[in-house]
Image 1 (cartoon, rainbow, N blue to C red):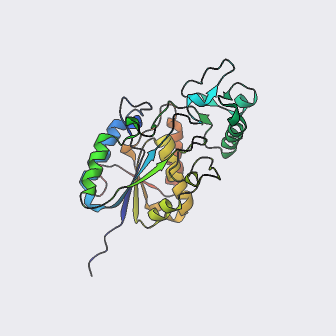
Image 2: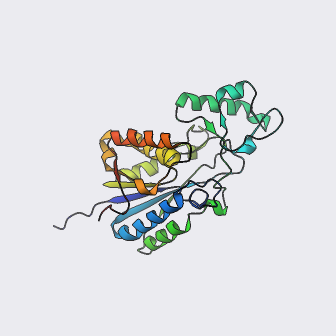
Image 3: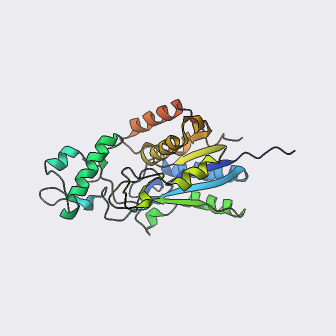
Length: 268
């Protein structure tokens, strides 16, 4: 009997202009080169890929992690990359611009602190729904189109449109909203990946969306299946200032069984 073809899935996390293009509003240094290497790998191994899953950050201008949502005592918004701690909110250093959201936002930052992943970071408005910044960066998009010419279909997974919670992970929001199914565990995405023999991970940024997506998939798979994960180390970069977070994540997840490889060498 012929040998069974290996089921290889590629997960590309947020390969969007705002992260991957030098003019993007939240450009991750090195992400443009990461995108080029990702595209080259897709073209090289396209016949080996059973599926490609692409996650897409999708935000409104009004978002709990954008400057417009908050104001200080003088009415000024927090500059991008401001960290808002629970103590800041309790002392009145930062308040919601719309008072109706104050209690919700206070509960939110308290829950983030209890979760222990990240405090609330204010980001430049990015990946706004319908904007050029939200589009897949050109080299990756062209490679995806080429792969689809084999009558395959890219699985696009959107996240982040609920303006009251952050959604670094493509699997679930940092603080799921019980009234919004889109923020809760994406069981379809997880179950689809469970069918794979190997899963390649790439995208932006290693310190945030890549780390949390992989971590959440791993937590739902169980450690016995993490050996099928392969992080393409030369196609993902951390947000500046969060390099240690990325290093700690890679150490953590490889300790649980994930492998690491270079995009230029995988399946040679």
